[in-house]
Amino acid sequence: MASVVPLREPALLAITGLPGGEAVSDALRPKVPRLVDEMIDAIRAEIPAYDRPLQGDFGERVRGSTKASVERFLALIAGEEREVRGRSDLYVELGRNEVRSGRPIDTLLGAYRIGARVMWRGFASEGQAAGIEPDVLYRLAEALFAYVDELSHESSDGYGEELAQ
Image 1 (tube, rainbow, N blue to C red):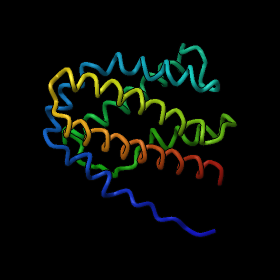
Image 2 (tube, one colour):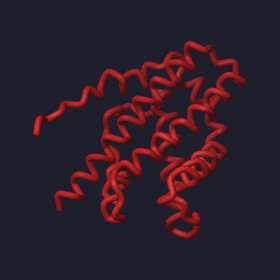
Image 3 (cartoon, one colour):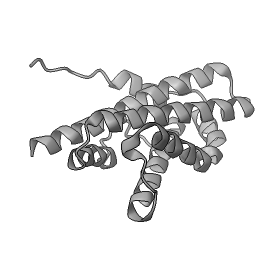
């Protein structure tokens, strides 16, 4: 099988190169708690495997990881997190957990895409209301796509590592 070399760095660098990233992040941060709820609701509605009661440890992990993903993205665009390509154990572990749960990686990657769609809808609405220029919002969308690609790659790595064990 041919090896594929991912071309991730240029798109990821766009995240930290967002003009006015700190101001954009500040404008969007108040939306995070409501956005997390909307993301989780959409994922549960669209992916039957994830439509479970959000109680106890499971509920805390789902809310915590979703919130951490959104907050990391906002920290990246604000320039608060310098390690753009730093591997995150959270996303690797999520990929590993898909194997342990007997699900294909596509289930998790689908959840990422749904979450990104909902996140973008919320950010676009909030950004427009805050007066963020359309060109900056377009770059924000590009950064979000690159970010989801990176999360997907990390989770796929974890999935593959777990399968190999």
